[in-house]
Each structure stands twice: as C-alpha cells, then as structure tokens.
Image 1: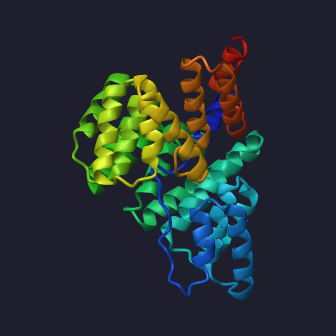
Image 2 (image 1 turned 60 degrees about the horizontal axis):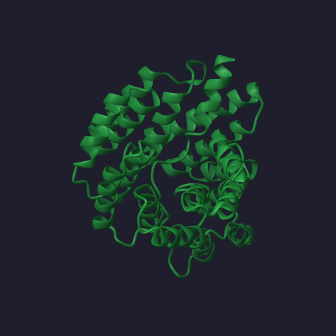
Length: 331
C-alpha cells in the first residue's frame, strides 16, 4: 500500500517545468501546418495532418514526435506512446524525444493498475535518465527526472538521496534551475522554512527568464502571499510583456488582492478562451477555478457554481473543487 500511494503521488508530477513550443519549421516543411495547429491547441487537426504526412514520409522522426505530443495533449497516452516510441526508434539520440516518451509512460502508469503501473513508472524513469544523459542542458528533462525521483519509492528508482544528487548536478550546469528544483524538493518534503528561503532568493535573482518568475509566482500564490506573487509577475512581465501566461497570473493576483475584479474577470476569461489547453501552460481548469473564486467573492453564486463545474469537468478528481461547488450550491 505504501508503494501504491507513492506511485500515485509521483504520477501527477511528471510534466515539464516550463512552457515551450517547438521551433517553427520552414515553409516547405510538412510540419508547417500541423505545428501551427498544435501551437493553437487544435490537436485533432494536427493528428489528421500528421497522419497524412507520415504516409508520404514514413521515416521522418519529427512527424512521429509531434504526433506523439498531439496525442499526449489529447490525453490519449496509448497512441502517444506508440508514436513517441517510433520517433525514438528513428532518432535515438534526441534528448527531447526520450523526455516526452518518459512523460507518456508516466501518464500511462497513472491509468494502470498497481503492478502494471510499476512497470510503466520504471520505463518513465529510464527515459528521463536517457534524456538527461544525452543532453544535460535539457532542463525540462532534468526537472522531470528530479520530480520523479523525489516522489517515487526506491522500488521504481526513486529516493531523496537520488533527487538531491541530481539537484546538485543541475546546479553546476545552471544555478537558477538547480535552485528551482531545490525549492520544489523542500516544499514537496514539507521543509517549508528551507523552501521559503530558496524562493525568496529566486525572487531577487535577476534572472532573464520569465518562466523562473512564474514558478516563483506559483509558490507565493499557493502560500497566499499576494504581495510577493505580484513582484514575481512584474519581473516576468519586464522580461516578456507578451507572454500569454501573464493573463492568467495577473488575473489570479487581482482576485487575491480583491481589487480591479472586472479586469481580473476579463483576464481570466480571455485566458480560457484564447490559450490552448496545453500541458506546459497553467491549466484552464485552474483559471476556471479562480473565476469561480472571483464570482463567489462577489456573491454571484450561480456563476461561481458554473465555473467550478466547468473546472471539475477538466479536473474531475480535485477535492477542493468538489468542496467549493458544494459550498456555493448551498448559498
């Protein structure tokens, strides 16, 4: 039972740390249209285009890779695995391919019964390790591997000692990424004072990467510290004022601050309407949850209930959403 619980915990933590869209292909490349569809969140359309393209180029690893990513975003992990395994077979030295195959194995484990889940989890670990070995500067793979090892039991390759060693190795390559991983480790292990010290340091780090500050903003949002969350958002906005994640974070910040709620509603609704439901971005379910909180704070209980219901459709096992819906239904 202990191992069952540990495996269940780790499976929710296998996504990459930051949003990343693949580089745009050239105008003559068969990836042009499906890549555009993928980036826009039109995953079914991307699947259709890629399936047709593969008929003409059956040995093009990049087509299978994007097809696997598309199935992953559609939560069809069986087909994602099949496509990603083919991409790895065709181009075995591509770190990114192994990392995404590891993600798909992890999600497949989530859908499986215990003993089968253990097998998928071990495969995920192996792919993350391979991705890091092939390209130590693949920070998404580094973070996936560290998350796995900090959450998984030893029987499937996890353990705190392993995770800390990975973190120290990552710090030698990129100190900021290492600190993000260390802060996440401390919070996961309930070492809250040590985690707070790390994230306070990151807030003052003068990083040139917006994603660093969005992770810091997530930390302070979860601690209900609107002031420091606002500082992190401002830092991200200075780096990239066009980053589409800003609508989500600014909307949440205003709800926490209980001010400019009309603007907060507009930001969150726009985010839900225009940003793809993508595993690398703040989930639409979370944006809808914060819309529900906004409406609830204004006494708009029927709208709050509708938002919480919509969020539950996207995140059906979220106990906090269930409790929120019960709460507003009683109003």
